[in-house]
Length: 119
Image (cartoon, rainbow, N blue to C red):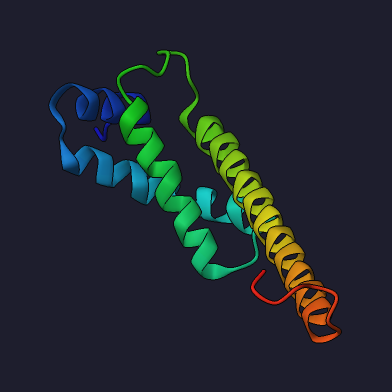
């Protein structure tokens, strides 16, 4: 009889069994991918999100409570990581926009002579 998610996770946590973790990834990759895809549209970004979700699973495997529903945990984590990624991208875009505006203002001031040479 095939192992259930909890058994696979426990075996991975206990022994580091790569085959157990691989089986978990194969079982749940589509769920994680779909959850991330609803929030983050870029394929490359979704791939990075999925990798981060399974990296977090690997690091927390030994500490997840026994009553954790793995599919629920993976879905929630995928949504959280995707939202975090989207927020970070929005902040980065805003910082880049602000920097470009500041540069444009500085260049305009330099051209018009409002800023002393050497500044």
